[in-house]
Image (cartoon, rainbow, N blue to C red; front, top):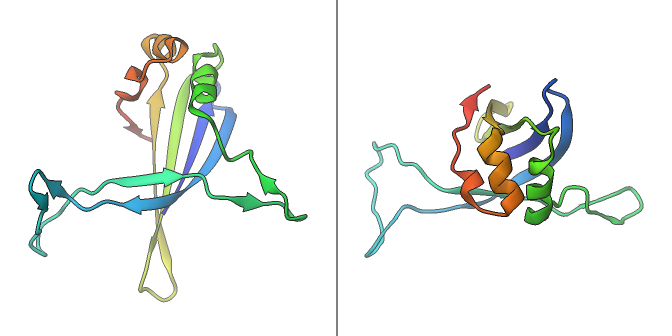
Length: 132
């Protein structure tokens, strides 16, 4: 799966966009180790997304897809930022032709979010992502 992260202004215009790719699929764990899950059960698993190395046509590594956390915080604290849209694309493997599912949600950037970002705190991540 892939993820597009976009910071939007009040008119829903994209101020910054980065593309992330699926990187890690974690197994459910308990304090004593890996949990054995019956095949009929639904299990939530951790998925991490990271920027992938991408090169331009001349072979130079592009850095526009990498965003330092401190730069993200400065950007979010800016007065123009109003929301963050997360758009997911999932490929269903084993089907011919292959098919994809898409989903997106929006995280509002409210006054507390901006304040926490300006202070450099991590509280800004305790937010809901509303279906888009």
